[in-house]
Length: 383
Image (cartoon, rainbow, N blue to C red):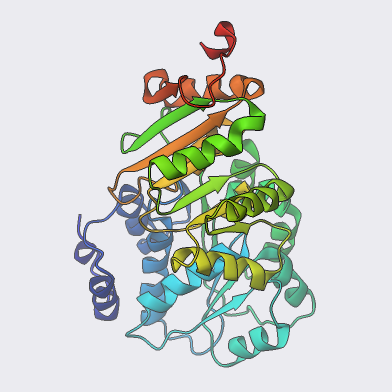
């Protein structure tokens, strides 16, 4: 299906053409007509499937046709500052041929500058919950003309403990509005939140029992934990990896591995929740601009990052949740392109690998046992 089939306003069609968007993704094909027909929507789809455009196009179409005068008409809540900024960038590119303005309300930035951007006539606010609730409690932003509420990455919002803050924010918004909740997993708490904020929603669930990872080559190396760094350097060198996203568990792991890689002659940056906003932005921009080749990140910091042409994803440490593994490797193999996901599995992590292989298909993960830093796992654990 093409975007022209939705009868979008000419400025949006121009912007879509400029960005090179042609065929819709499944989530866009299902969600856009529902929102354009004034339905609330609960949508579950993997990160990187086009959810942002799915809610932005109907929202922008409404704002283009709006006759309600100046004021904040749309609120988009995002769990992280990086994702909020990416959504704002998408809005800026899609509103290039309109007069619609967007303001970003996030922690780590000047409150005065953010409020000034709202006062200059922003019709859309993209915000993280903590900062927005602070301003809302101080009555710094007027939402009396609000027509749209979108909560993005709902499951991550819950994981980060934002549920109470979101409820407080929603309680201070007009009751009559269009609402949409987007999530990568349908956890019971996510469904409960949807029932609270959505009115008779249409549900779109594009998460398969076994996710489609057909474009991603998955490889797992058995290696003793002390030899992980040596093996990672060996793989990066042997495969001549140009860019890669490397996942670790903790903030300290991210800093330690980044330092080790830089000492080994690579150009690496770290991304985690303990960094100041400007540090996180610098790390991400350094990676996307090509200044650094490797980005070492924790799950919360990397969730929702939209990075084009990501050839490799490494699980330096395996997650204990198979769905987190899917989110991680989903950073590669995007938009019809192939990718490679490599996991370094120690003996203690074999218990995490088994449910991962069950979810994605046992034969879809190639096990490498013979390499310069091999070890022999217990057979019953590796099966």
